[in-house]
Image (cartoon, rainbow, N blue to C red; front, top):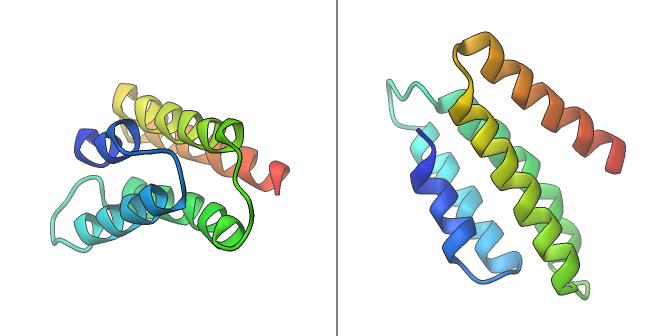
Length: 103
């Protein structure tokens, strides 16, 4: 379950600082041996990184920050709802395709 990292996005304030905290939490947990969610955690961290890189020195509107949060939470929910590894990988692949299309 990815509830611990999801909570950072949901409970934290909108913005780059929260996204950076989310990335660090994902990577820290993914680095722990034997975590079944290591791959989704790494992918989530990589999906969030361009947001942080771009908005680190740019103005960030509430709408943009909310859209980022919504996309990340939807991806986490899709991973948690996946019945098996194939469905989880499909959810992650969809998020990657969406991020590449937007970037």
